[in-house]
Image (cartoon, rainbow, N blue to C red; front, side):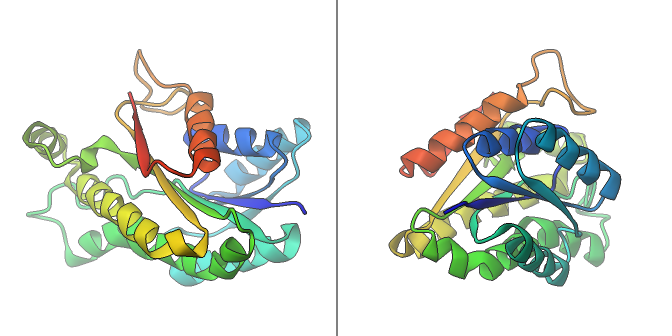
Length: 229
């Protein structure tokens, strides 16, 4: 039976690497994001590689929209075997002492609320797959480390750091909750930049490396997470 991976927060970096890797392994690929043109281009690129793919426009911070996208993906592509959450709210709550309540809430709407909505909507499929998985992209701003906290503060990425920290905890909680249901939960934490993105640095990580790492976690189903730099 064919399987579908839903990738939320699709773009030219990590999510492209994941889409190509899982697609090459026989998965159908559902791309979810806010920008239709980007999704359309992503689907075309995957189809050119012989990968069945479809696009679904939805805002990761809107749980109803995410649930709707998951439901449409199931109808169009088949049962959801894997959720890959790549969405994040960069720029929101940059300075937590001046951020509005809505900005702070927005941080968690993407990192936690939207992610949970996706998992809840797909859960029957994830459990039925027997090897279902929730794969989460995270960033090293989530580390509980004085130097990291200082850097996140000075670069006005406090909201992103808060989201990453909460998401890191959620990985552990979901893993504990779903391990007896046959659903694997794993995280790749990125400590660096990614090739192909606007913020790529000199030693940026190739998206294919991240895609391969997620595939290794998916197959191994033992490690809670790995770190790439």
